[in-house]
Image (cartoon, rainbow, N blue to C red; front, side, top):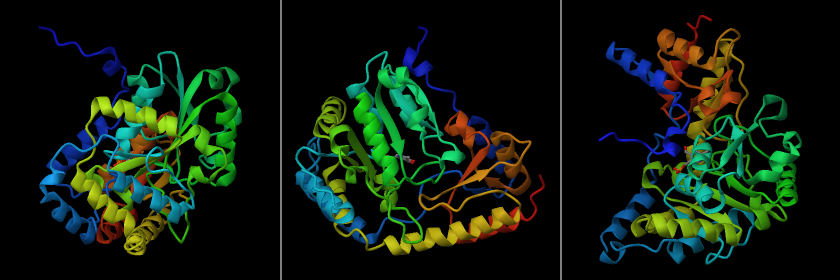
Length: 388
Ligand SMILES: Cc1ncc(COP(=O)(O)O)c(C=O)c1O
């Protein structure tokens, strides 16, 4: 029998990191000591208080059964309490909060609830690849919104043609931004809400990095803006805030019809997040702030060291205000993939070529601050030998 994949699977864009992955394996096999700044997965362990709560909860039989698809009310209440404390936004935990098996799960599922074939979805370019793939899976048409340095890596909404805005059903935005490290302020969020209201577009704001911010900066929630709750949903994650990427727990908040639509998909696809993990998640959120300073201290030291090394090597880079990514301009004469290969071959430093996040990411390379300070120091040292 010939095994034929579905058209939607064939439509997934080519995996642009394949060549980098091949090169990584080849160099490792040759014995090269690679410093891998390619992966956005924190190396810092989950706080002990959260692990302790999981252990306790996992031992109770009542937590071994199917959870409710929308999440435990106690978890959703903890989310609402956290939102109130952190953003001064009140949410109804019953109707405006949904537990997710990581924010990726919600981002991947939301177009299934609202996008029909023929609908456009506005997507940041460069951007987290799941926005595009989830749109394709739902039969929608992704439409890029370029994030350019001239506009501080915010999409220029005035450049979206009226006929595209008219066909758009959904818009993804993501601040603090992966991969550029850019942040958004109130005027931008207000413009988004106004644009979305005018054109009848639902906004999905991915705020997975809202708690990874440097030098006392506090990213705001889209939900703080008047009218946001009429048009928007916001995705959050415990992954980066509490170093819990492997645990798979996140949440969505906002417009009750959008939250409800996503919930409807989830009831039919998954069976919710393991209760013991939700109980550990309550512990995480209720104790929010306990570790923030320590975690940000670690990223700050790493960021400063890497910036120093990159700048000393003559590379152009802005200091990110948030996220654990550093978005570096590729020197003239190289594509992002060529420069990533050169860095790997010459210095054993792995970065992610910007092209992998979309066409507008060309000309940049992303480094993640997710390895220890000793390794970043080593990278800083190796960068002295860079020849371009
Ligand atoms: C921008 C962005 N959104 C969402 C996610 C998904 O995070 P999680 O599913 O762990 O909550 C990631 C993960 O790297 C990300 O970079």
